Image (cartoon, rainbow, N blue to C red; front, side):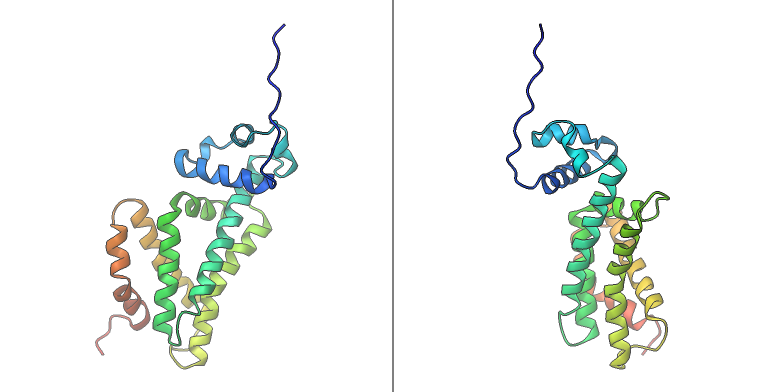
Length: 200
């Protein structure tokens, strides 16, 4: 008679966090297609049914990974928004935080945007994405109150700034730009965003 191997006892203490760490590592090294709850269970040493207590299926796992990514990015951007008294300093710090996250976690950033726009994406995930952009919106709204930038819809201004940063991140991820060169020239990029191209 063939004996089935017994499932190993779980000692990590926080199964959900361990599963997410393992999932992010798989995402980074092999891509989203390689993710499965059964493989994650094997990686962290629990029964194949154990991940089901936290994630009902792969879609729920992907949403949780993307949600955690948005929460981490929001914290980084919120902290950067307090980097200095002037908008130039705060915008530069925010740009550095965003691109730093993008360079360190390109696969996670791609998943975050993919899940946000996926028809099965959760409302909680959409709200997290809005909060992340909201940190930039608040920074620009504050700058308007200080008279540092022109009046207008701060959400549209934030969207324009975020699109520029995400474009740089995508070019870095696609190897069209060197990350170190982009980060070194970030001050110039921010000046162009804030002050435009017209001669002064």
